[in-house]
Length: 386
Image (cartoon, rainbow, N blue to C red; front, side, top):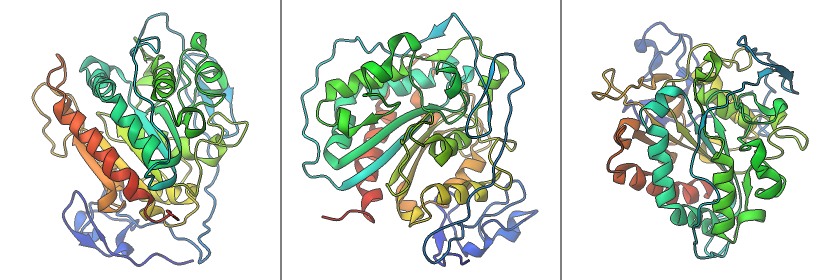
């Protein structure tokens, strides 16, 4: 086993450090060589064998204790379904919208790319209009967003999950990390998604109208009103890692081949909380260093740092939030983010989405478009073969 020997410069901490400090037990920041001591660990990129392989993660079981029916999956995870007759929704996929058609592959910089959106749908997000602000910004610029994927990548997989459970999904796919499938009555997978719980270039690569209908069919599930305690337990990093886990991506599993281990990866985390200390990841992976190790294993351990990008829309770094903006400083997520290449990360203060009542969305709109337009090609540089 060996450890990659590159030097990392921290995006948010403004320092460079020896990677030998990553993952080292600590009590104070002084023992971390420039990193922050979080939950007793500093950090270290995952170790891999010379052929790029890595050890498989141990199995895990995490359970829900709130009321509702439970179901078992191949993850060995106890999942929960909830019921609610009152829901908030995103714009309907029946909205009359017409976009011009684009041709996929012209001027493409990516052979392939996987894109994952993790949306925190907790009550505090909805009550401050964070979710509404993000969706409004995406709707207003949907054509430009679609063009990035259709023109810059030959094949794309684009999936959406929540930061906790996914109660609107079929019973066997309500667990954390399952891709959102929309409301059962809409039959999004059958009617809009070509049989898969995510958008693909094969189905949506040429026509933005088709992409639009699929995207808003998925998001039509909206957020649960008066959710259970388990649904309020937001775990954005955990949700992303489970969504990419092989157990959820086999042909007959909930995510049905969404995550391709050899494809470049772009993850959007949208939340007003930090990843909590206690989570349902495999034993030994419940800290920022472990998250990177697991991601490295899920992505084949091949140049993961050069082929993975992260966009974080979360609370401000400082301890004091903006007046009227209820957020937590994302300290643990920022520690995780610092391991990514500095050129492949972006961060935006969620308080600048102009929470309720919604105001000017120029800042979040500009950020989203800039992130997509620059990161998609940048994260593909190491895999592009003309």
